Length: 351
Ligand code: NAD
Ligand code: TYD
Image 1 (tube, rainbow, N blue to C red):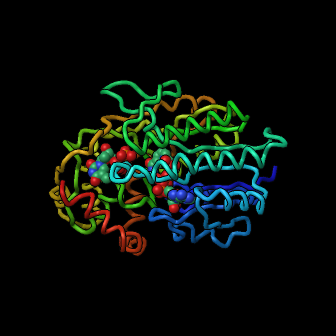
Image 2 (tube, rainbow, N blue to C red; image 1 turned 30 degrees about the vertical axis):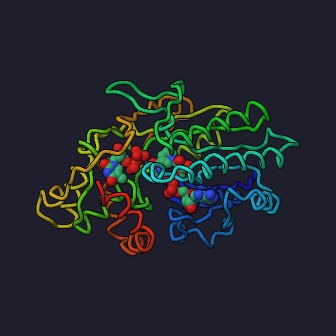
Image 3 (cartoon, rainbow, N blue to C red; image 1 turned 180 degrees about the vertical axis):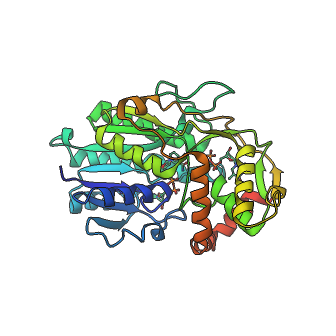
């Protein structure tokens, strides 16, 4: 079946991998990438597909319903994969309103337009909302998040994503929008903006700058290679059951401090530095307020129902990721110039 898929946030980290996968794998689909190109959006991420005949870029904001309506009409949009969001927890602590606008109101704008545009026959359409495991809040030392875990978001970011998930569900229940939601754990890989732990620390190690570990470094995250997330989105988009959630995770938990030490070890080798040189950059700084202790996903449902599992081990994925950053220092330089410096100073100078 031919489809005209609107992928929002396609110039960002995960979105660019989803766009690339769909453009290359489905030549009969038209892929419309809608992105406002905030600090996190970068068309350099998509250089290899920008001339593909089944790819179109629309510079637009999910906060502008008029533009969304025009884009739906112009491209006869049949499906949505919604990734556009403000995505960084620390920024949500500095300025929560941006998250409320884009993540909540932006999502409702898209739902409202899809509802009106698809009203003749909802059955042939799909609204895939890409969300996070952070909506479930935090775990203690044991247990996993399943699709039945209650929502208990703790940061303005996770609260805004939880709210957007609720609106997607509500539009499904009330107006029959045919939705699926994926809740994924922490991603890493190429094109990750260097404000998040792994790319920030890779960049700082390259530059021999301090590695600011929050608190004691005991918080735990479940890490997944970004292309494995894109594969999961592809599967759920095509084969997931309407009205259901699918948790996506790597079965790959790491305490931050252990992860950082592994990263330092791998980078010392790749940069021909003496063992321990990068580890000496570790600096413990003031903890993040409301810092969730542990995230861990039970991805049994997507594995059993759709046959998905991660394709790379963490060491393989980290190694590929470090190599990508070492080979793309221009990309790193571009995204860390200008306003990035202001954010860095505001976030780290008083810790
Ligand atoms: P990102 O910050 O790298 O990219 C977000 C993209 O959305 C950028 O291209 C940005 O320009 C665009 N955008 C932001 N505001 C917009 C607006 N108002 N209108 C249009 N476009 C806008 O984020 P990411 O890490 O790629 O995350 C993508 C999605 O996946 C988000 O919804 C996030 O909540 C979710 N998610 C992320 C992770 C993770 O580890 N990064 C894990 C699970 C779920
Ligand atoms: P991050 O990459 O921001 O993802 P999230 O908060 O969505 O999980 O952070 C991952 C973990 O690393 C989290 O426990 C916070 C911690 N962290 C640091 O210790 N120092 C840093 O400079 C950053 C950005 C994160």
